[in-house]
Image 1 (cartoon, helix red, strand yellow):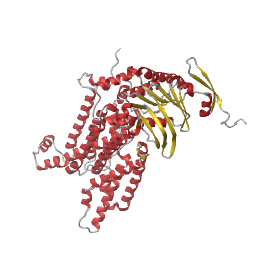
Image 2 (tube, chains in turn green, purple):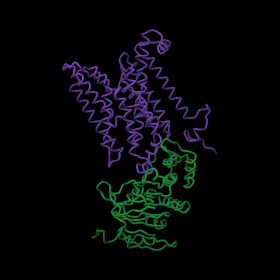
Image 3 (cartoon, chains in turn red, blue):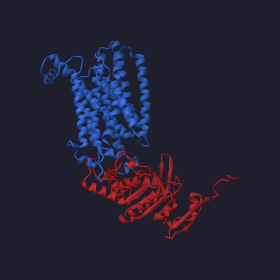
Image 4 (cartoon, chains in turn cyan, green):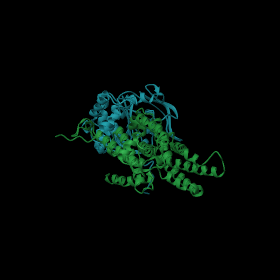
Amino acid sequence: MLRTENLFLSYGDKPVVQDISLAIPEGGITCLLGPNGSGKSTLLKSFAGLLPPQSGQTFLDGRPVTDWNRRQLALRLATLPQKPIVPEGIKVRDLVALGRFPHRKWWQGNSTADDEATTEAMTMTGVLELAERPVQSLSGGQQQRAWIAMALAQGTQILLLDEPTTFLDWGYQLEVLELLSSLDRRHGISVVMSLHDLNQAAQFADRIAVLADGQLKAIGSPQQVITETLINAVFRVSTTVRVGNDGRPFCSGASTSVSTTPAIIN
Amino acid sequence: MTQPAPPYSRQGYHRLSVSGLTPVAKLVIAGALCLALVLLGGIQSGAVNLTWPQIWQGLAGEGSQHVQRVVLEVRLPRTLTGALIGVHFALSGWLLQLLSRNPLAEPGILGISAGASLVAVIAFILGDWLVSSDNPYSNTSFALQYLPVFAMAGGLVTAAAVYVLGLRHGNLSPVKMTLTGAVIAGMLHALTTGALAFWGHAHTELVAQWLAGSLYGVQWHHLHTLLPWTLAGLVGIAILLRPLKVMQLEDQQARSMGLHLNRWRGFALLIATLLAASAVGIVGPVGFIGLLIPHISRQLAGTNFPLQMTLCVLLGATLAVLADVIGRTLFAPYEVPVGVVSAILGVPFFLYLLSRQP
């Protein structure tokens, strides 16, 4: 589905992603993990065809993503940025209906099929009863579900999300992750997202890619990737990793590792 | 338990109210009535006292030659041009506020008004200088006649410069563009004032009047110059209505929905610039209509873009004509420029709106 080959990405002169080659197959939930500035968001932008590579290439369905027609691409994958902007005064239904944009030529209005897709997306995310409420009046968790509904209304098989849980409290974080997990299981939508919480990634992901300093450090199942050695190397934190009842790894941070922290006390 | 539908919700459109009209239709009709009233007021008021029967006769091409002249050659073109000017500034400001996500954006912010003003003042001064240098082919009336063209060119060039300087990594950045526009406008204003102070002795009064935004001496040919731009602007905005909705989203998200963001944003800016620059060319910079009317229209119309646009047209025209009527009757026979009156009328209302916001 998504594949990168020796991908280099940069903003102006500032290199961000350096020589990443990875493949994400169709289906399941893929999490990108890594410290701040490791290139997670930038890689997601490249997946969405929003950032032309410096060198190397990102392929979607075997074709360079930069060769895709913008509208065709919008029918194949939907993107949710980290800090989306809510249009002033917009109601949930109208926001979700914006997701139908790529299905229409610019002079066409929304059809009955579009209205149905909009309603279905709101049902799937549980925001139907909020349809007539202004988005700005909703709680953080409800807003995030409205945004996911909008991405779903786009009707794509791939969903790219940049830290969808970042501004939510812990309860809403789990709610959003469970929603994404159900979209994958019930509707076969492939989810690719960046996350900050290792345990949430371990719990919900089928596949984890770990980035650090713009490079790929590991990719595989949570059991393969979430190890004490790797976490120590990437986040500079010494941890204890246990296996939970569900067979997924679970880690608890002990302290920042001595090797990189200056001895402040002395 | 049934909750009443909010005024402009989807249900609201279809639910008939007591008088049998939807809220949208009511707003449009109210706006149209306001406009009709001020248009009549614009034709009725002036230095010569005319009765309504005389005015109808004049409009119908009957009655005395004098009445026909006053109604058809002076008041009608002035009133209609005033209405169009209002439409131009209101629609331009509406586009700019949407594009820059800045409720205080208006045509002045892109340096359009400042660029047009500077070029107009230079045209005045050059016209005057050419006369005194005994050049038989040029005189001041030449400068006056082509003032709209000069001013419009000045506005367009300035706006183009602001766009180019506002580019960031090849993308149009609304924030950078707004700041650049403000800085450039400030510089051009200083140059205009300087030019007037040094060389403006001959026509200071005329120039000052133009700079304040005045409909004095507007004739049919001004309307004819303006009308094609009005139509082009309206067609452009009709094309833009749907993409504009998506352009309100975060840039990357809008692009990932299949929108060619830079293309559409550039097109919207072009339309906004053409509308403002053509209007400035005719009457000079009139600031507050472009700030105020879009703001009021958005408050009244909610998120309904076609309704916002319609209200901008109706209310923009209304405010411009009303300001002109007040300006030429309040201290008659002296005239207060439309730009001054619209600011004095509009600002208290604007402050009232701001104070009501949470």
